[in-house]
Amino acid sequence: MGLFRDRARRLLGRRPPAQATDAPLEAASDEELHETVARIIARELGVEGSGGDGDVPTPISLGRVAAWMTENQFSYFVDSDGDLGGLWRGRLFYFFLFGEQSEILQIRGQWHREVALERLEEVLDLCNEWNADRIWPKAYVRVRDNGRVHVISEVATDLEHGATDEQLSQMLYCGLSTGSMFFDSLDERYPDPAGVAP
Image (cartoon, rainbow, N blue to C red; front, side, top):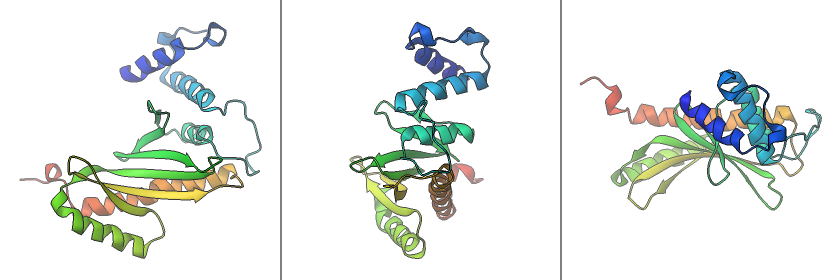
């Protein structure tokens, strides 16, 4: 929790005095700290005070995604590029908005292990088999400059007309759960040597 408190102190330290909390930071509970940081992130992402009825389709924003994560008690972060991400079952997932009006929501996951370049063809075959049999997620690989292969899952949805809270929740769960299912299948195919008794 020390790392979380340090980050909270840095975030709270940037707030104007009029928005400072009444209680000292050290006296705040972990839940209060999480809620405070979530409010700050929502404000930075531009959704604080947006209001709206959860049953009416409204434009998608990273703030709505962050609010969903807070509501569902998921931990998340905003990296130095302003991208929203988090870890689910040890796998890194990011949430992006693309398009002229940021109307395309993409949930992109990365398997927590790298693959040797010599296995590229067989991993591509696994991705192609997955894509042929299932709608979600799209599975593909990226070869890094160091020759290591990263396996990626991706679910993208065009939300030009917005989404209700329930629709957004369904899409986010879909991206996370189907990505996790794909990564589970990779774990079965390539068991971690550290997890196997000698």
